[in-house]
Length: 318
Image (cartoon, rainbow, N blue to C red):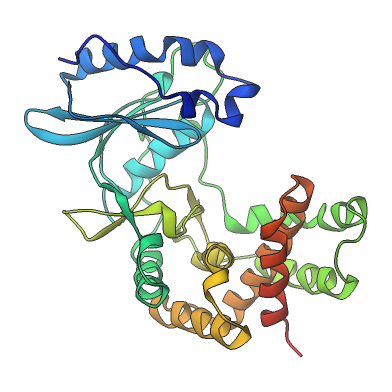
């Protein structure tokens, strides 16, 4: 079983999220990891890694290399387990076991040092585009027992008690606040840019698609694997238009695209490889970029709003 010592890196303990929450969970985390290892018959297999919200502990079970991922249990934890159970390894990391109430997921081990962000952009673009399409399976057969129900009194629901959110729902909800945020932030860009984003909310706020969408798909979230060359991690399960996150895919590596022609070429590669409707995909890029632009300004970001401005300049129609 696991060795009786787990040390959390200082770099993880100092992450901004823990400034406002999670202190009790962090204090108990080494013991929780050991308890999960004992229950699931895991042995430690190397130094742990971490992101901003979770630790990843390399483990083995019966000789098989796996990752024990631990994160603060909340509704997002339940949703992620639900998403992994839904896709069941189709284009995503495979989930072997889970305890939503403990924030524990036992995952297929991928190469954490090799993401699509490490590939040249010309090579990465068609891969992530084809992954968008691979993940787009019908959601009509969602299993009702996707994750075990948390204990009585838990602050979050079981995924069996919730519907899969629609990309159209997000647009309809956000459309009512875009202009107010633009005003509150001092009208940070031209009114006609805001109007262009508002103009597409009607179309994007309606969809007949029930295909699955990963609502957090970008190059850093796709890692190298052995079962499949590239697999998505930390997915967010939505239903609707698979072009939903196309804007994020573009702005996350926009600095590597020299000028509007290069940006539009990258867009066309994704549209072609993912089999998207070009006009609707363009509308998603416009809407999501304006939405993120305002969000970034509200949270004090400095570089991303500049990228959003470049992206909008390339995608607005004459």
